[in-house]
Image (cartoon, rainbow, N blue to C red; front, side, top):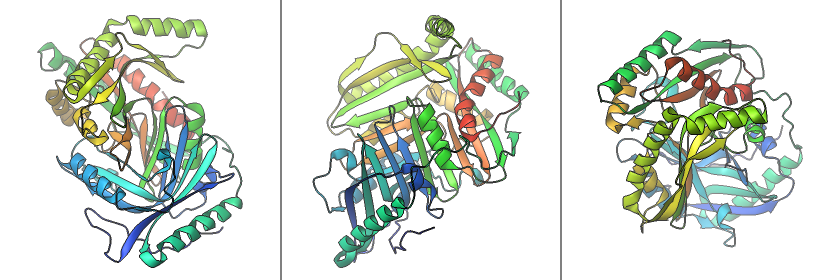
Length: 466
């Protein structure tokens, strides 16, 4: 196996700036016949990135990090915005004629809470973003290879071009990589441990319902985990290839701040998409199964649209988002009634929204205003968050929080990290939640979370016993 050239590039930590005698250079060029899956598979020592939006118009893969930023506390959104903007505007672009979609951007995410506790989420602080060292973007049938590298100014351009050529030569040794057996675990031997038993789930749901009867809660989103213990780490090229092939209407993501610490998923919910002052978002809440036949599927969809419980849950999310968006928009368009968002194994109620942001409002500023929506936290917000803190027996970390990218203009796309999992070597934790309102039933909500585990279980090649 050929290895990538050893590069003494500078890795920024916290707020560190790079040394005064180095510059950050970004070199991009078109390449032919480049396999993203081969790219992600054959360099076992470098942390990885994968991002494919809804519809898969653009796929992005990365290896290694040229520079990283992390933050925590109440000002983490502001800190990430300031540092990414500063660093991206200092990059020396060796090709100024790039399409906007190809220009450098930081990828990363935020945690659900403003601090992250516990060993499980080591490597995933309350906010973390990285600029890929090596990056492939596939867009409209074309592939673009980017090298972002720190070096002394007199050698930076030569080094970037050399590394770019080396990666292309190395890729030619491989071929388009098939998804051999559609499973993530190399070994099928997987044990399962529950962070929460069924009786515990029933108890916390019934506790929430009691709070609703006394008027302290209108809605709360509660989650559970599936803890999978394998004999080896999953093959994440297989996992992401499976999710990309089977869930085209979801955003697929894999973020690995350090090797063998992987956060991944296929989420149906894009929280924000901001470009040149315009934005799109959507309220997504209320769920039902898919049918085995077109007629059954239509009946289940009609039942979801007619469900008073699901419509109420959905409207709570719509109302809160309108409350947050109205003061910072000069134009706002909202669908009058929810429509069905159909995925492979589940369907949701969805209300699309779009508009124009007030001058100076960036993607991360909008993100900070919306997170967490009632679709991930609850109403009233503080009461719901306090209840989640009290009863959930695990640290949420990055689950149900924003993951995505931001560029030098402050534009960006962020998805909500649901239908997600955390891998720490042989341990993999899957997360699934359910929105609880006054007429929720613990048994049905348990079944809904089982349904939401299924995409990642299938991608990993694992079946859980009932």
